[in-house]
Length: 250
Image (cartoon, rainbow, N blue to C red; front, top):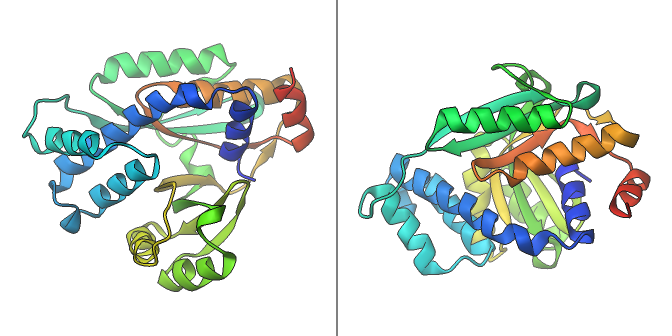
């Protein structure tokens, strides 16, 4: 199970998932807006926008909300101008973190991200602090009821995916970044609905943490993920199921 799935497990056990829905929509709307600004408002000719729309629909975002976000990106409606940034840092026990960010105020965001790291015994670093320990991959999450293993092998791997694996309630499909759009198209054609898809930073090796360090790593990941300007969080730490149970029950 991936680290991100474990954070989700803890949130679920603490009943916090519903409270995250509004923030999730904010992140999705930003991606829709930037995708439309970068490549135009026609999803047929804009793979990034097509993926963003699929992700938004996967989270049951209303069509009119999606349309407004796209129009803000194309300039048909007034909206904020976001820039994309990558922040890297270290956490407890030398763990490494990467945060994909979209912001309309770089100075404000970097100050807030730095404070989050410091509060959790971490340090916000410069470029290259953490990325060296990760591989860049296309990542698609498919709810298990939506597809069988045979379907994933035939459709996803057949379209160029590297592999798929069990990620709790979902299947995780990985691909080369250049193959991500092709795999998404194949899943769409096969009527296999996805929960999310993105370009991910996956750790080459995971670092086991426990005790107070495990609590701080999970708390740091959650605090970064909870920030309005952070689109995705990736880390190289791992926590045992026993520790998850202990922390969730605390």
